[in-house]
Image 1 (cartoon, one colour):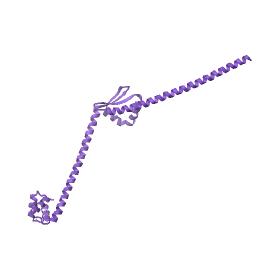
Image 2 (cartoon, helix red, strand yellow):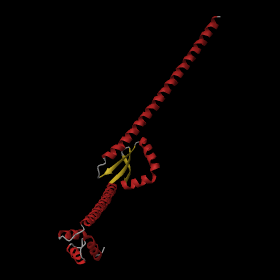
Image 3 (tube, one colour):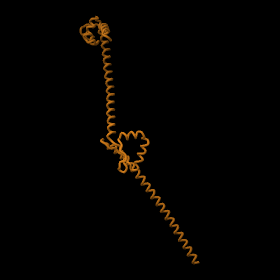
Length: 216
């Protein structure tokens, strides 16, 4: 709305002359609501009911604009906060990948030492195979850990628990195998003793038969 339209509209609403409307707007920096209040203070406004309706509408429009501005600012702030948090998190992740290493040990000797970032890339490319290989290797005294500047106790503790579980399962399996071997050996000894007893009985029977024949 240009200034001329504002003058015409104010003149209609306040029922004043063109010059009075123009002077009021100029005095109020061309703000319609302020100009209406200005004319009312001067006793120039005659249509008070129209002024009330107009004033209410203007106030509603201003309130809507304020609410819209606040919501827009909140949305922008949320987007900015999310971007900042994501950037900080990503930068921290990159730093961790650079400053730490993925170690593979066998019988407490390092056999592989890779930067954590490279290790993660390799794992992501072939995780479906590497995961199985890593789990199986735990049964052959292969251990995995992280080394570097960061506090990695929690991660290493978790990997050690997995390794300890593998050792426990391996020990239980070996114990069962040994137990089964001992059981089979005992059965073999039992069968062997039984066979020897039968053989001894046969030999004794044959000897007795021979004695009987001699007596006859």
